Image 1 (spheres, helix red, strand yellow):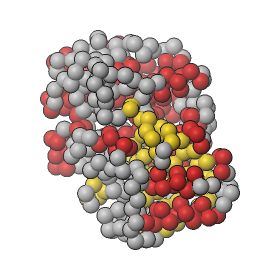
Image 2 (cartoon, rainbow, N blue to C red):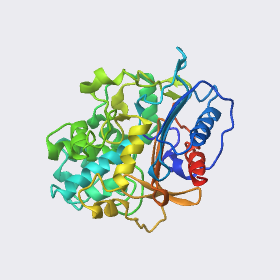
Image 3 (cartoon, rainbow, N blue to C red):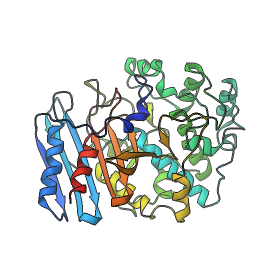
Length: 385
């Protein structure tokens, strides 16, 4: 989900990555496994401790670096400001837009299997009702392709960027949103942003249609489709699933409280960000492990599929960020990195030159341009190894 407060939120990963937050320490807990240096674990933990204050109640981080024999999970702060329960490294959280990486990979797995073409129009996979809504809004669903949705170049307005959407959520946090309601919000709360393929324009709405495409082709729920296509269990992801009704018995076991301007959003209905633009629960360790597997060719059947996912896109007007398919390309501490961030305080970054991944979750959502400074600082620790 992208915050309606700030339409520039997808640019999180471009601005404050290298900033430092030197704030008072708080309660901490951490685990260090197979590390070549206990000092590294202490340094990582110090970064987490320094990020905690009265406006940032908790932070979770995992560092995965096979080269340095480091697989470190840590936490600082509390999981609930009311109970003051200490945050644990293995707790789950809503990863919001980082879900798009999983959705994009799932679509590309179907492409590998010959079950769709990236040039297919979305009208081939979405319902007649949704096709009619898009046409009503001035869109041409027979001209918008799967590739356009994957790269945010469809010209579709982002329903999640509309101020009215946030207001509706805040007025009725427990409302059960449907994909259809969000699609209708796309055409009523904003206008067509351009022709398909003309320019980059981040759109949660486009990814909700990719979620629908997964369901149409596989005959499964989006969550089951993602889990099966990406072989999440085989990859060792034990705490990653879509937060739908079928998984409610799992959601409350370890899920942290996440905050928006200090307001506890724990009981906000998951459907506000559920259908492909967001929707997954995960842990910092699971996210780091997934990115490691993805970039080490253990997700796709063919190495060339990852090349397709990461291929640079060119537009007549230079975009604000370098978005590929379900992934941003950035410079982090002077080295290339691939990343995705999510509204509820999540960010994951893979650094190819080091074959290392750092995943972080801040329990306070980002409503201003910025992100998880701990990524750059943790990478700096690795760079000194």
